[in-house]
Image (cartoon, rainbow, N blue to C red; front, side, top):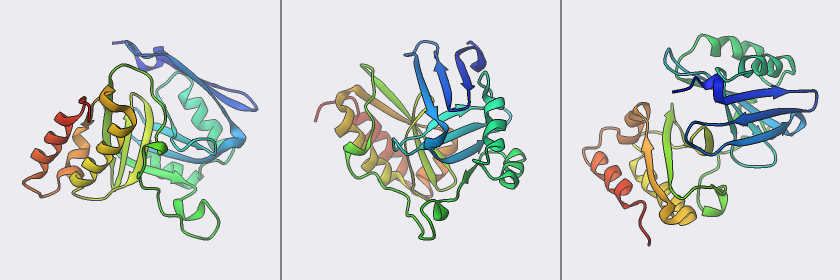
Length: 219
């Protein structure tokens, strides 16, 4: 398996960030992110086995760009983000010493002035982006109370779900199925998401398994 730095490349200039991604066995993509369009930056501290990840939110789309620090040019991009003060310096120090924790700047209650902003909930397939591919396998991840749904390295949706969220899993899976139809064949939970997904419920495992098996079918 090629190293991450061999297929995920990051560059930047005075006006924008450039991404060139050629994942093994998957569709290549590229993007250009204008510095002036960035409205929020999150840093996900990984562990010994996972790269730290920077999530960049812009004002032109609801989902973020997920950029691994271990990508070619990823570390240089992080230093540039700090240099441009798009992320709090003290928070960055705390993030560098953490594992499996998410740090965001500005905090949600500061993004739109002084009024607290409630995280968006998925209620309609129109909130989701278009995806290419005959078969779609998504990943359901969890960091503290926040659920993150990815297609490869791309964040498709994230919202604050909390604890024992297997019923919300069914609701979200249903909306995703409305959007992508039978092309959506699975939403696979990561190992670290299982604690929040199942909670203490004895029926949660059966419930989630049933929902996953219902994907990939019409109707």
